[in-house]
Length: 380
Length: 248
Image 1 (cartoon, rainbow over the protein chains, first blue to last red):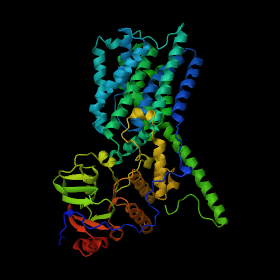
Image 2 (image 1 turned 120 degrees about the horizontal axis):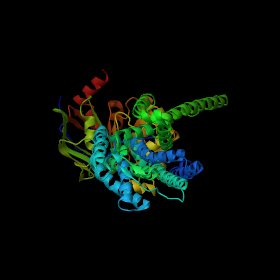
Image 3 (image 1 turned 135 degrees about the horizontal axis):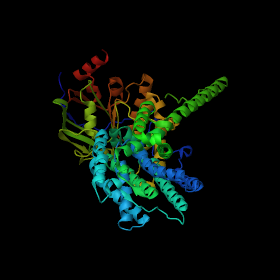
Image 4 (image 1 turned 180 degrees about the vertical axis):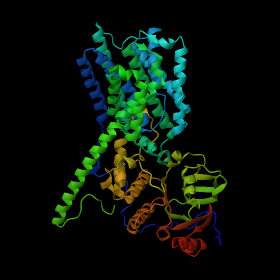
């Protein structure tokens, strides 16, 4: 094969020939969108969802009037704050990291130490816990989020085991007994009032967490996360900084886990190493996967329902390890998107069916009047 | 005219196999340029090297005259290099609109905290609508990409590449899997797009490629075997060999 002189050097020296000849259909336009396509600038959903959770949750807890069920729901709310972060981290961004229970421990032990050993108020402790978890997540995330996908999961897999051992051997952390006497968020004049008020603070924090997560997921950054979750090379090719986004998601998920841990400590009044155990990590995964890993509402309901079930009967609480392991296995095999995914699929089928029937009916009507078809899109 | 994108002696090997061997080329600011070659000739690898998805073993890449050899794909994308993929890459379970909007944030490096006050999604979706309208598929904007035809998916991918108003578009086998009629629509779209930016198209459909390109590159076994105008290309052994393959 004879190679032309220009082989292996592709410089074009000639004048730019015109590249017209197009129909104009695909001419790049800088014009704005048509009025029909102008999208809503303000997104009321995150704020509305956050307010709804805070108000409705407060009302529910107030009606429970400090009962055992109310305490269980408040504990479930603590886990729900963690699972909301997991929806963003695991469900939406597909960042598989097993560090949530560790950061729950940071939050719970942080509250316990600061309040019982250093006489911090609940608010001061909470703010300090948030600051500590941000720094810890940034330091840890700067290292572990360099690893993509499976490597990130493996890098964080041993963390709960290591930290759990550390907590059980540390006398400063109360070893197996943990730290007792953690004050509630908001002390009332009676025990019942204290439980209700602490529950209300907890659901307000949950509303805040859900609002923030929803805001991020529905923002432009949420669109970027969606693209990089599908395919990291695709994300990079549209200008997404993978390291920045991975780190941000890791930090936000970790901080929410720490806040959840703080709420747990405040609600229960005691912190034990159990919060750091690998069983706790599996429980959190189950809470997220049962209801649907991509749904904030599902993650909240999943956390509260599973917390209720684990404390409602001695059979479940005794055999929790087996039950959670089997349940998680079944869900991952049968319906990885959980209950929310199943509902979406069922509703989707019905909506698709209705849409197809309507389109068919309209097409028939138009044909009978000499018109074209409906909805298939010209040439596409 | 200064090249909008150029590479000088780029080489990439995988396990001792030279995928791209000392390729040097310059892409002018405007026009449509064809890149062809046999399967495994190194075309897609060259695209990956130019777009930054893969780092070159040796050689350099320049974008707008600046040395971009060490730049990651993200920075090259933000500097005006957009691409489409041989196999369509779209985020499943999301609408065509959202897939396009993801690529046109005014501030793609915005910190996550900033998104709480300035979410950027609404203006991005408006720009995405405009891009979909430009390609004639705005009516599909609210549909999930999973249910779109291959042509619509490829046009959505094209809209995503164009919505950031890139200086150069690298289109990797955009006509793959399309019918003759759909290829014609795509060819018109690509030609129109190239009126005010550079478009480099990798394609096996030589008739389509030579009919729309103003310049051709051909790769054989990782090396650039031809670089020149289309008419001369048609008289080269590379062209004959490629046509032979094409026609069996």
